[in-house]
Image (cartoon, rainbow, N blue to C red; front, side, top):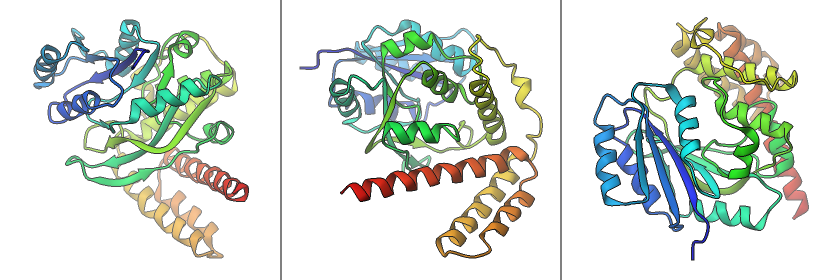
Length: 317
């Protein structure tokens, strides 16, 4: 029997095309004792109408609506206050959780009381639901912690003990990097994280969501939380959205340049090209923004950590 209640927090905003699939993926979970807390952030399409239909169909679905668009941080914090479960899971309104996600993540936490938050590997899917890539994260606590100083090494679609959120209080208002900030603050408090090797989540990459836009803003926010972490700044912080507006006009152009140059760099390294270093200069020249260039370097550093973890794992076999 499913003894412990899991509270799943799902913020939604204008996802009428996908929210039905997201909810169905939760209803189809092999672990059945959950409450699905959906907080709609003032959608202007038919999202909330769809939510009302699902809430009438299943009592485990609890829906709420912000009177106006409050953005992700306030919406998440509202969901946290409403959660009553022993565990808290994150879910986005346009993504898909695979059927055994909750069961496997909860089982891991039950068997490993020293771990506070567990996530998994994820598939990237397009707007039609087709798998277009795989996102690989380090698995063990050691290498997650090592990688975390470069980029978030835990997908924010995690399952956490409620006690972890009690220690962290709530998400700080740092748009585009609130999850990364929470994880770094948790590390200071001694919280530990693990990624399962299984692929248990499908992340939708579409025009208009955070994963396909705001690249410069997101990287600037990541650098900010890294700075706060190094300074051990734990004050309650609010960042005005205007902080991220600088140098964002050429975001799409720079993102394309990053993808092309990064692919060439990986190919050069794979072929042991002696002039691989020159590719760094090519990327730097292609990226007019220092934030995109910084992201490339950080991404490469995380790949090195992954490689190290895999080598250690192979030697142990």
